[in-house]
Length: 149
Image 1 (cartoon, rainbow, N blue to C red):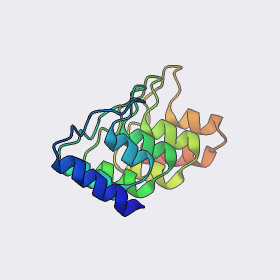
Image 2: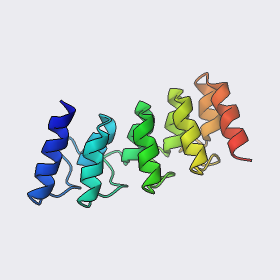
Image 3: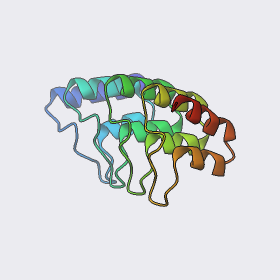
Image 4: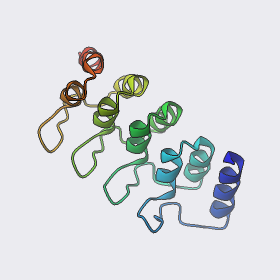
C-alpha cells in the first residue's frame, strides 16, 4: 500500500501537479503524507517543490501534524529539512505544544534538540511545559525545562 502512495505521488509530481494545492478538505499533499506517516511520499513531494511549511485550513503544518500523531521519523526528517519548528496553528499551538499535549516523549526530545521555543505561549497563555503538566505529562515538562536551559 505504501508503495502505491509513493508511486502515485511521483506520477502526480512528474505530471506537473501543484504540490501545495490542498484537497477538498483543505489538506495539502505534504500535510497528508505527514499525517499518514508516508515518508517516501514526503520525500518525493519536497523533491518536486512542496512547501515544507504549507498549512491546512487550521494553520497546521506537516511538522505540527506529525508531532500530533507521534510520527517520530517524519518529525526527524521534517526538522532536518528545516521546517519551521515554531509555526503555530490558529490556537497558537506549536509542534512542541501538541507533542507535549499528546505525551509523545521521543518527539518532544527531537523538537527540543532542534531548538523549539519552549517559552512560546498559545492563545490562552500556556507554554508547552504548562500544557504537558495540564495533560498529566509532568515528565515531559521536566524534559522541556531541562532542554531549555
